[in-house]
Amino acid sequence: MGLEVFWGHVMEESFRKEVVLRTNGLSKRFAKRSAVKDLNLEVHRGDVFGFLGPNGAGKSTTIRMILTLLRPTAGSVEIFGKDLRENRRSVLSRVCGIVEKPDFYLYLSAYKNLDILGSMTRRIRRNEIMEALDAVGLKSRAFEKVKTFSHGMKQRLGIAQALLTKPELIILDEPTSGLDPQGMKEVRELIKRLSVESQMTIFLSSHLLSEVELVATRMAVINHGELMVQGDVSELLGREATEYSIQASPLDAAIELIDSLPWAEVTSTENGKIELHLTPGHASELTRLLVTHGIDVFSFYPHRTLEDFFLRITEGTSEI
Amino acid sequence: MRLFWLEIYKTFSRWRTYIGFGFIALIVILTEVVMKLSAVEIMNRMMRSTQKDFLIFGNVLNGWFVTAFIMNTLHIHIPFLIALVAGDMVSGEATSGTVRFLLIRPPSRYKIIAAKYVTTLFYTTGLVIFLGIVCILPGLALFGSGDLIMHHFGKFGIVFIPEVEIPVRMLFAFMAAIWSMTAVASIAFLLSTLVENSIGPIIGTMAVVIVFLVIGNFPFDFFGTLKPYLFTTYMVFWQRFLDDPIPWQEIAKSAAILGLHSLGLFFIAFGAYARKDVKS
Image 1: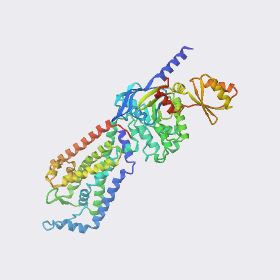
Image 2: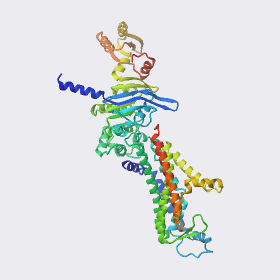
Image 3: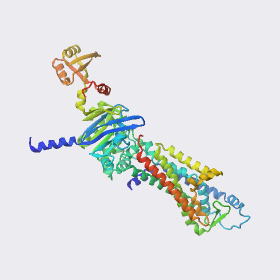
Image 4: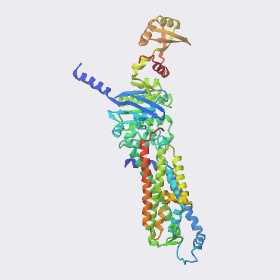
């Protein structure tokens, strides 16, 4: 490896490891209820960071504290290495986001909404607004009043306003909430594109594990206001997946083979589907074995519902 | 400055903002037309008590008199029109959810709240100026000009103001009316920062104005002692510019009390909003 290539790798690695957002013991109490407890998150530059948790777990409260809508009861937020409270203006000029559902001035056009919201950060040119609208597929509706927009269009307009000032960190609170499958897919693709093409760091909250799995590179799980786990998505989910479903033919041969393996165990069979428990790290090996034994595999997928994931974490059965 | 213009744009893009202007135009012009049609009857009523002691010549029912009459009648209603916009200025952003976009931007809450307050004052000023224009111009066109003869403020007697002095006195009276309405706008604005719906501040402001006016006008000693502490006591100080001689000292006192009132309310709103948790 040449010296230049070596330094290129070192620089790229240190760039990725730069902490863009850090919360230090972040806590919030509402009267007697503790909404967020001693939360320590770390988001690196270039991450698509999934912030996962069931409804009421404290995701929105955390995001509101990160974006200065709520005052923390204890702890602090650092963005780009600066304390948020002391450097609010300089920090927030490089951050943008959507908290809960995107609400706009319904009596104004999409263009004017972006103009007003963008102008609060810096002077915005007309072509920048049109570019942002184009990026989310709303250019043709630019001068229509937002009250005529569907929920999905408002969600996309929300992303457009987040992109407008070209922030380094975008915080999205449940960005696919309320969207139809096509809308969800479009938003996910947009997030991926932003991360790759614009090198933006994206922090997105969700209660859907599948969504985080599809777009995020790193994730944290929060429950009852407490951080349960934090790390690389592939690592966390890879370790977690132990329950699988297989549709294969002939079924009996597949069951016999699986039962003969020391690291696999059939738990049930129903409607031509085999449910099995697999020791982590053997998924690809099982697929290979099934095929080499002349068994056709129609589907093979892990059971990783958020509920299961949480249960494992909270019951302490996970190694994590 | 940019924040102020953004607030102005938002405020004047809503139809609600124009309700006040529409109401004033309608009610004032209607009143003036009715007064024109009933001119003889009005003159007879006006002169009934004075014609035994005074011999009055000239155009008594003129545009200036009509303006003073309408201002006297509407000074209870204008606060409601001001509260309609001022009460929605901050809480409206919470109701619509746009507050979540607004407060995550680089400008501090202090700057945002200051821009909104200045916009509220701008609207208040505009509304009172509009009232003046709608009263005076059609008033002079319909009734012509002349000297102003009015009842003496707080005394039994009449005041005579020569025609030549009236425009300047009216200018001061309208400036004083703007100053008074600023106190009303400040109440609505403060309430608007404390709640997350627009109805509360509008009703709350009107409740305060009405209760204070009622307390201030009760003929009991107990309420009499409270009167100096009620801002509504000073709200009609614009009328003193149509007095003779003009009581400058009393005007200055009223203006100072109302000014302190507005400033105090603004600073409470300022402090409350800066620390407020946005949960909507």
